[in-house]
Length: 450
Image (cartoon, rainbow, N blue to C red; front, side):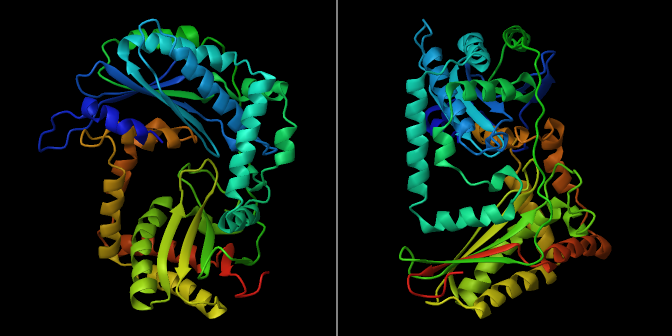
């Protein structure tokens, strides 16, 4: 999300690092006004990079009409405009991201301007005025973006898959242009007042900060509204007795594409709705995450290089959702026609690789996972640190857990045969269950739509 700033400010955040790994200072404070503040140290620059993390996203917009996007986009535009009224003339450019569970903003500027930026942020956080003209303009943009995405048959099929995965959770409710067009200015005001509250706000500020106490004081004084709001996330109940299959014929592809879905546990360590009926949902996410690193590499080798039935294998997954996430494995076939035999072959390879996991493979995967999350050392650009942290902390993850996550990977015991067998047993248990959704995009005229 923040990569557009990287070329501009890379030189500001790279310091001299010794051969021994040095970890950047990081400090978390929960302020008296319920705002969370995280300071990340950088080098001797007077510039700061700030991320505004809100635990507010599409999941809070229960009718899926687009209120989270409308409020977030207009908030960003007005805030950027206000920040650039600074009489000292320093230009500020903001980025924004609106996800299922969070809304993220960022800006970069001079340290001396930070109190002014905080005041601007608080002003629109509590009192965002939206005109009918602004609302109509943003509705048009959202409608256009949605309609463009639905021009791709792949996106249509993925929308169907998500609706099947999450019948009750807001993640599965289809977006509605009709509901979008029915939104009023008062609807947006109510949405913001209900969800833009201090207890959902986390500020991440990076820089060589000379007076943290002054920044704390400015945040406490300007974010003085004590109103709280509860973060409500629906947990999808179990409702599939068997795999749901979707097929679609499309002139947009030359070869079939198969996408296989499983729902995943998360790292919040809460009891899943599956725990009573389907105990495999209680398995360790870290075991699964390690295995997926191994599985992606080996499944591609098997299906592309050895069996030669696929031209590409891609993975998309998240263990960091507020509730449950999902794993999507996409396999682009080389064959002209899709068949159940091919589907069984792909699933058989996944289960085979789960059953053949051993100590060395797990140790290698653990090392790769450890490196990918070693984001607090000074050799990692601070933008990458903020990227990694902001999405997770705004989805409800505790700061201390994120700081200790790297060590939890390193300390996972894989020394004895019993320790390895425990991890393997959980992996096999998970993939013993059939996928929850399988979708197939066929070339036009090939295969039969379901």
